[in-house]
Amino acid sequence: MSHKLETVDKILAKLAKLGEAIREMEAQAEAELAPLRQKWEARMAPLRDELTLLDKVILDMARRNRQEFFAAADLVDLRHGFLIYARRQVVRKARGVLALLESLKWEEAIQRTAKVRWGVLADWPEARLISCGTERVEQVSFAYEIKTPGQIYRDVARRGPGGG
Image (tube, rainbow, N blue to C red):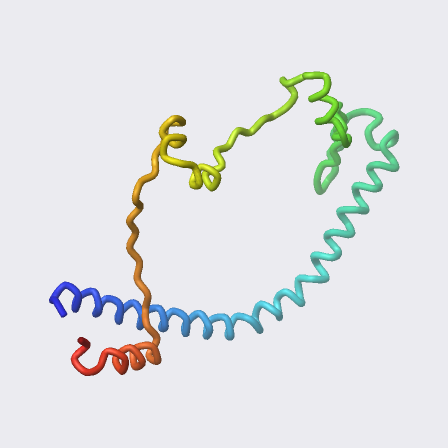
């Protein structure tokens, strides 16, 4: 084996050790944090539920008492915050609008997203690819795989002693 390949092999071994150390630490951290997370989640859950309920209550009160609360202004300054009333016109998003817009040819209201379907082009012949300004090229990539201890043993046994 060449010196360069030996260097690559040593790096692969180091990557395997580092990856395993990180996985072990993550597992330990999760094991230690899980009970803590559960403890705090259990304590926060009733507070979150109450917050959600009170949010609904205050908005419902504002909706039901709109005339009284907002008779003078759209912003009510209270001791602990503000109650705000806003009114605006919006377009209701109804079903079937796209089909009607297309039939009326009102294109300015339609968003068209043009996108190349590269999977389709991959099956085209060279002449057709060239005519649309592209070509088929060779793509080169490199990757590595770290062997587990069991894989190393099987690989050595298959190749025999000396790695040849």
